Length: 239
Image (cartoon, rainbow, N blue to C red):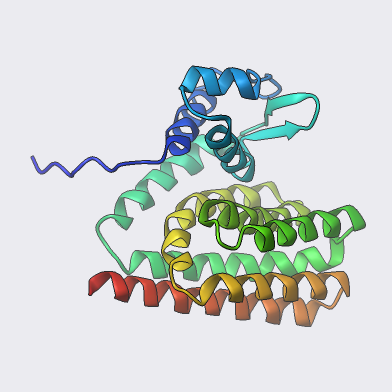
């Protein structure tokens, strides 16, 4: 039997995996309140900074809801175990086929363009304000990979949410969990973070103007730019 080297993971990734497993196995059910941030950090023996990063990822995945001043709650996850099984299936292929990253990006591109078109029709002031907060977070953390990527992913999930289609959100969550693996590769291409920040601003402005054509064009351009960065990163990895 061929065994693969054990991958060294960041502390927050281990926290994400454990909480995700508990939710998927229904040890925590929708509406349940998780232990406090301090309590979770102590149980995992990690810093609160690492714990917050893990919680941010779980929030982006739609598994939890963080209510400021109240607590951390488990969200409804209907259909998610089925999506998760597909997630694991594709995830295993990513370790075998390098070009699967690019194929996966193609699927995400179709999904994102369709969702941004829906978002134009349903954009609200609170939604736009939340998008802008993501952009501010990206700008503030442009030199901090994990925080920058998390803010960008949150931006796109907000667009998925405003589309108001549970199935689309579930599929997006599956893709985002896998795309995070490629985002770290993209980030390391020196010109990519600045371009990504500019692209998110263009998408935001088109949504704010309720201009469907510009929103679709901005999203297509963003996906193409990110795809170029991904291909460049993969080629660099071969060298």
